[in-house]
Length: 531
Image (cartoon, rainbow, N blue to C red):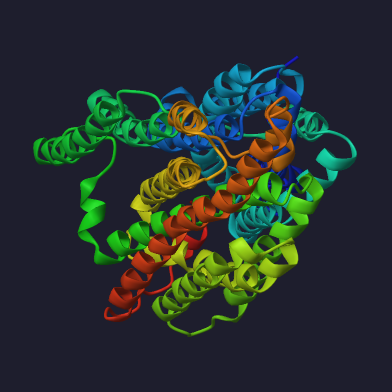
């Protein structure tokens, strides 16, 4: 009895069930972080941990994915795209299963952030190649469209879905659902035809190490700073030196004609440089918003996961709707001008949001600015991928898409980490300043507050703080709670400067784009999975 392999038929151009399974895998990949974002307060409560610890895990997962996505693409080439796809799914399943069973933060960091991040770095590039190799003709375009739609829907409904399940069941149930979906996708892996790699099998080990050290050093330095740890300057220095060394190394490899982690020749295109930097800035802004806003809603307004998800819905749903509409209706309109408009709307939305934060007593106050920012992000999502990849020759589009994805993932990790770090550093400074100015607290109590914040600044709900202050005199309790109430919105306003500055720099990029002729739309670029 011989083993049969399911091969796409000539008539259909591919297996429709496989396209659905790949879309399911992409849905889990995108919805995963949304589930964690809206579940921060529930995870903190259930595991008796801190909001900054959970935020660090979220940033670390994005960092690992970014640092290893280029390496993951090469590993997939060497071990086989189907095998890399299955290993990536298993890594993601391990992360989701750890979330289902964990009793502390450590398994989340090891399995969800690190193992899951490594899984994502294998999964994304291998899916790209498998779609290209398992489908042809109109069915290939449908497969890309289905997987892209799954990603967009997951981004749009993730906060609502995660909030609903966390509130009425448990965040553990939501992650258990991910495990079930991945199991179904794995059962259908027999439908996948492996796509052999015919290029060079040389591995740029030095480039891979420098890439991981560079991105890892920068983001880990920020995370260590956020947690009050030492060696911040050393980590940042290692990261920056490694990134500089990576540029030198890649140029050297190209001159010598040897295999390199990526082709620096891609960056000779002004369109590619502007596009990938804009993609990174967009993701920094999104990362900053998606850590500051959930913490504000859950730790300041004391919303549950569903209320937080509903409050974030204007951002995610508007982004989805505008991206869909702009993708269909853009026609012959200039993509550079649409990108410029996107960054302008994002800048206006965040700028309007910042003064609202200390005055808002519910999520309703943020609906209008979140819709404006969401509309801007939607315009960017609809155009940036094609703008970045259109000028690239068809045979290099896959590599360029990988670099684009790495840039976007690094931007997301940086935004998550930096906005979180700025928020906690600002909270420490503002809280200490207000405590020092207090006429109620004694000098000894003021010193105790300053010392505690220096080693463990933390965003807390007033309810949690009240429990922590049990046993203190009522005037002291009331004074510290008042200081907490006044300090948190200021810290969050300062954290929102991260997406504001990213949007402003993106606007400058958009202006530079409008000074160039628009690139011709590329079918090869459209048939890629976005960053």
